[in-house]
Picture 1: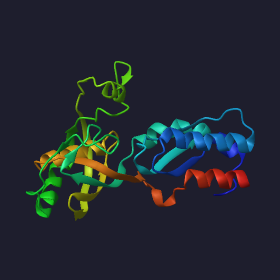
Picture 2 (picture 1 turned 180 degrees about the vertical axis):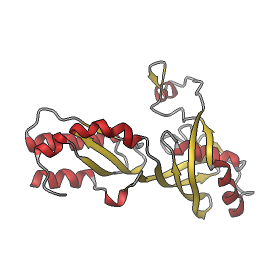
Picture 3 (picture 1 turned 90 degrees about the vertical axis):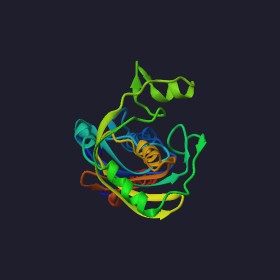
Length: 233
């Protein structure tokens, strides 16, 4: 990391962060905010991220500071690329490992060929329902709040665009993939719907965001390393 000054952060910096497993996007932003404020003795600084990553996902988080926070909507709108793992034969209410398995299904009929063929159903513009365990709001309340209260909520489907969907490895019941998609795509919903398209079940058991537009996680830094390096200088 170059020697950034107080004015650099206030005028605007774009920081590429590799979010660790278990952290919320909010935690990652707060960690950087704390370090920048401490280093330069600032009472406040504008800072925010361009697109949430679930705590169970790792990878690229674009964080903007100062005047660059105005650019956040522009970065949010760019295509994103992910790698991950779908585990077939079981579903969970959250479509990932945040909740326990609620149903199991046979996978005996699923061949490698069928898995590869089924990806075609998900390429292009598709309709998907966001998971009930998500931060989307309905009537001023987040969906996951309704879900945790055990309340049924009608969720409107939305159109998203899947540019690429590639199966990279099959080790049943685990299927590794790479996907490139538009803003607003829920990969957890893809995992759930993919299992259903195979006449089975599926849930997301691993997810890493590798790209946002032309930005690559290979150029990102761990937030703990960032704060350590900043405070040492």
